Amino acid sequence: MPTELQERAMSFLDANPVFTRGEFAAAMDLPKRSAPVGRFLGQQVAVERLTRLRREVYATLPNRKAPGRPMLPDYIHASKYRPDGVLGYHTGLRLFGIQYSVIISQVQVISSGPTGYARTPYGRCRFIKPHRALVDAGKTDFLTVWKEPAGIPVRVTAFERTLVDVLHRPGRAGGKDEVIDSLATAPYILKSFDPERVADYVELLGIRSLAGVVGWWLERWQSELDVSERTLDRLRTMLPDWNSYWLRARPGKAELVSRWRVYLHPDALDPTFQGTYPDEPMQVQ
Image 1 (tube, rainbow, N blue to C red):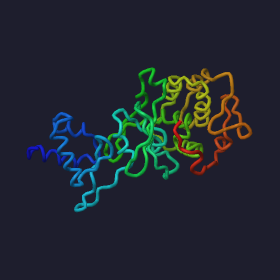
Image 2: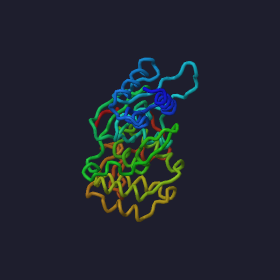
Image 3: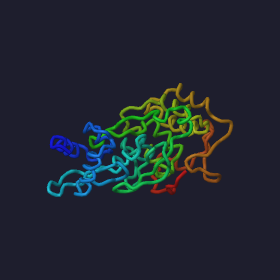
Image 4: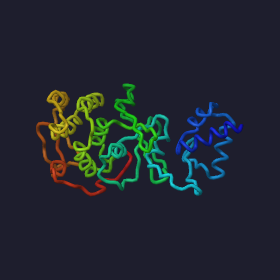
């Protein structure tokens, strides 16, 4: 690699603590599969300037002669693992500063690729497919936003989508207790919130019983989040003719919220509840 290009390459490494081969090649104005790109990255791995996290995903290693670079959160590494990856569920709560527990060492990445797990430098990454309704509609990016923790852009589900997702699948967000406690802080932390977008997402998913638990939560925080009756009415029109169970409610341990046709675990209805981690195992669903 010519000296001028070598200098550009080293500057790139200094500015990008985690990156893909494609990003590096583009910055060098070289084809992704070019020999100079492969040679340079291989050399940097060999001298322990870089480590390969996954196929074509690299991270810089701390410079022992110049310590001080902070460790990156595991979700920044995981955000590079899939080209279409979107951080969500409990990781979404983390990025909005709403998570209750800080000891859940799993990152959730929504991707159309295969489901399963991968290692991050500090824990595990779980790949979750987007809901079939989003795939069928060609809207897997619906309600996603970019954030820049540590100055590095990552794509994450907007809070309005994260809210619905964790109510729908609490096991992907640390369990019932974690979801209840995390969402209880949201009205006091959120800087912006659009209830209409929540209704848009529930309508897109088309899960009628989900409208009940989401409507219950929005009504509970109606004044704090400025939720209009119009939004609640949109969700009411989706309600099924039956009562459904949510947030780990089950016969004998549930209370009916009749206006939303949902049975909820008593803890969800207790404003003083603070749960313990974890409530349920993190399993592929």
